[in-house]
Amino acid sequence: MDADFLKRLQEAFIEEAHEQIETIRSCLNELEKDDGNKVQAVESLLRTCHSLKGSARAVNLRVIEMTCQIVEARLVSYKGSEHKVNRLFLDRMNDYADGLDQVVHSLEVAEEPSVQHLERVAAAMTQDEMAEALRLGTSSPIILGTDLGADSGTGSRAGGTGTAASSADFGAAGSASSGTSNEALSGAT
Image 1: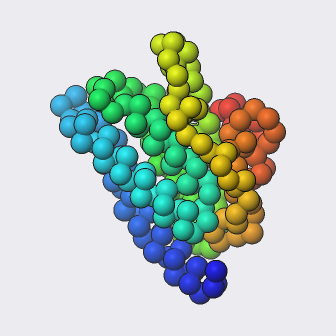
Image 2: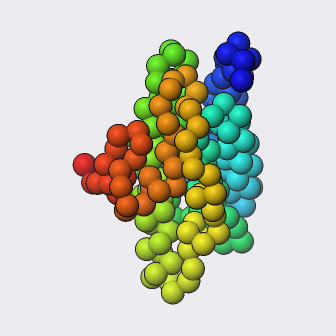
């Protein structure tokens, strides 16, 4: 891809990402209200994460693309039962928005994005979903309904030359290509 074109694409991504992060935060605020329109908030979160996922793919930000896929799967599990959106999920989503902010800021100042925060939140969401599925005796849509392993994940991150995290980076078999350890991915510090 032409370097000048990629730069313009990244600039458009940054501008759009700021708007999408604000939408995510607004939807989370709506979900936190007792009288909030939870159905509309979940739908808006789904659309926003889907758009962000596609935008991230266009600028080779694989970790945002993959973590958006995890968030989307979790949101789909709430469709039809939006009243069951819980505090832990809202906290994870607020953490996720913070991580997105960090990555976008890094891109703005032309630094290599630090993706460890996003990886930790995505791994925690996956663990939360699995724990809930085990508790309820159901299948986890995050694990069974998504195919994060379809790509090797070796594309370059926008703004740098590192490799993006692959689906294996969220599991227990090895450390993430960004340098995080299994403990960091599982939430331990």
